[in-house]
Image (tube, rainbow, N blue to C red):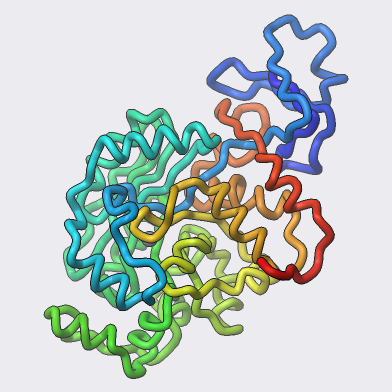
Length: 378
Ligand SMILES: [Zn+2]
């Protein structure tokens, strides 16, 4: 039994003086200690004045880029970042470093990781399998290479397909990858509306980025559809409740409506956006539109660590308006578990789910309890 002053079960209001019984694998019961405590004869771990929560989720990272931590350019804009990035050895992962990062994630209460890999998906999935974490390993399609059929479910995770972006992955490839994942009830993911350069490429404006890509022999035949990235993704049939759209920074009102009406999950990566472009998603409007939001760190090429609690801290310090504990926990637990189709095991504290938990850090509780309203100096 785990006893705690509070439990955020994510199935209803926060339970006071809560207890949870598990057998090491599976949650058996959750309820008030006054119901479950009397007569319980096993060991009790008392967390004291803490809030027990479901294991949290890092809904977007690229483990194969972990060796680039501290080696990339921060605050120089997307073009500066990507030009420098392309000069580095991108796809030669340091397996020891990846294992170290995953051990850190477990220590922070992470139970599920969504990993994107362009070149090393099978290797990264193997390391994830060994780590004891639950995972979704997305093989990222790029260019015009036809996607392989997704491998599907393994003992601890899913192997699925992602698109790199609307302009770096050919549209027929994106549609085929999306269709293949839908057919097998697997999640699909796509970087979408991340920065102004992407928006310019898709909308058809002047773009130094497009010139750079063409100099490198890429996108020679790309024809801009002349609409927003989200509108293009919708037109291609890439949105919907089976899709985790990552970033969603450059949005207009119609884009937000398209995301909301389609039931698309959106993964915010606030620190990565700040690192690369200094921009940020319209968090407040996305939340107000009822879009199920998730949090991801992106890779160590655009972030300092892979801890999703730090993403929450960053968001809480800058969010304009009310963002309660359950809103933040939803982004870290129940929404990403659903988005990644792992909600039969994770996302809530209830009987039948995997026995994986986290404890809400004290400063997160304090940040979600302070008086609401526009926050200064963040
Ligand atoms: Zn990414």
